[in-house]
Every structure is written in C-alpha cells, then in structure tokens.
Image (tube, rainbow, N blue to C red; front, top):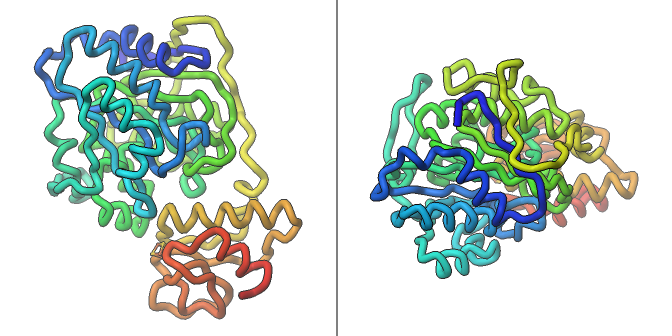
Length: 360
Ligand code: SF4
C-alpha cells in the first residue's frame, strides 16, 4: 500500500478484520519468509479488550493466520505493559496465552527484556533489545483516548517497546517529545488499528464505545492525525503528532490522503469524550505524572463528577513536584510536600476518592 493511504474494514469480527487488512495492505509481499516478524498489540493493563483498553486477541490472530498461510513462520508477539501492571498478567487476562498456544507464536515480555541505548535527533533513548532484533514490526494499537495526551494510537503504542525506567523518564520529560523521538528510532512496517470498541477517555478502559472500525496504514503520523479526528480532536491537540511530523516521520491528513474501503460501513466521527475528561484539564496541575497515577485520578474524578463533588481547587500531580513545597492538594507520594495529599505510588482511585470526599 502507498504511504498516503488508509485502508478501512468495518464490522464486528476482529479476526476477519485482521486477515483482510493484512492481506489488502500487500506489505508482506516483499518480506522474506525467514524474516522475524513482531506484532505489537496494546496490552497496557491486564483488562480484556471489551473494556476498551487492549487490542482484541482475535484481531492479532487474524493477522497471524494470514501470515502463516503465506509461509511466514518466525512470528512473535511483543509487549511491555505500563509500570503499574505486569505484562505476564496482561497476556493471560487478555487472552494472549491461548493465542500463543493455538498459533505456536511466542510471547515476549518486554518488561523483562534487556535494552540498548539508541540515538535520535533529540537525544538518547533505551529500546528493548527484542524490538531491535526484529526484521519487521506490525504495530497493532487500539484507537482510544488518553487522559494526559488526549489520544493514544500508532505513535504512542510504541511506548510499550521501552523499559519501565524509560517510561518513567518519558513522563518526567512531558511525554510528547520522547514519543515523537521514539518513533524516529522504531519504525513499524505496517500499522493495524483496532477501533472496534476503544475507550475515548482513558487508556485503561472502562468506558468502551462501539465504533466497529478497523483501519491500516504505514505512516504513523497520518494514522494518528486521522484517529484524532475520529475521537473529535484536532491533531494540534495531540502535540506528539506535530512533533513527529516535524522530525520527518510522516505526514498529517490532507487532501492527498486516500481513504480506501474494503467493505461497506460508516466511519464514526467526533465520538464524545466524557465531561470528567474535559473538566480534568481545568483543575489539574501536572508535572511528569505516571500514567497509572493520572488514570487513578481520572477514575476518582469521574465518580466525584457523578456525585456533583468535582473539586474546584487546583490538584497537583507528578514526579516534578518531588521534594518541593506545594501550596494546595496533591496526588501520590510525590506530593508529600503539599498541604495535604492522597497517599500511594500510584495511589488507588478509591484512595483518591476518599481523600476528596472525606479529606482523609
Ligand atoms: S506518586 Fe509520583 S512516582 Fe508514584 S505513580 Fe504518582 S507520579 Fe508516579
């Protein structure tokens, strides 16, 4: 397929979607049958795909079954869940252990992988060794929202290819630039997006919205600028898209983009994010917060919002506040220096909820 193309497959069958998009992409035609192919789903947390957080195993199975039929035998599935969860648990809960057995495809836990320092235009980054050893990479993100970056799709999904220590560092660096830089180092040969029922608000799911859409491309900047529109966002609202374009990683959606449809259906546009997701930005003072910490805050605020108890004073969160005195309230152990703070690292949503509700 051409770089300025996006292929679509509509429906509710992830297996068929994986097969059809893989086949129609034609990318595999130039790959050697002995090449090592890695599939990188999004298993950020140990939650089933129906939660809206993770890539459907059947979507990955569809791609694998097509590749195996074409004679590719060296296939792996690679992932490193977020710092607050274990990839091993995610593989099991998300149905990837069964998938691995059925297709005889190994699962590579990148949280346990060694890493290598690589150069980008803007500095050095550690990348998991197994990712660097691949001949071909197929990026298989979920189309969903993210409480800090608003969107997570192709570009951000590669954050699972770095060690946990780097994930924490990315957050201290503000996420957007390191995500763009990472994509300069790790380039996928094909991107297959699971848009069946992602959560438009949170990367950890809980509020799945049916979109019944799967799409594919080779340019992660194009895919993400298109994905942003599907979630009702302007690409400028997701800073890493522009930063990746500036690095020459790809081109944003334009009149040159060719939208190709493999079957009949309708694209869903402007899916509504929740009120809490919007209001959050008004009160949160974030400086390098870890994903799990921020997600707990989001969840607690959703409950408080429903009870009409949404806090009005600024809420501080993030590693950048460590060791500083903060006037006001904070979230997590990093905010020990605040007037009061919700304990934990990362704190549980229930803990944060209690903190706001009872002041305990
Ligand atoms: S308390 Fe600090 S280090 Fe712990 S999860 Fe939150 S932001 Fe990260």
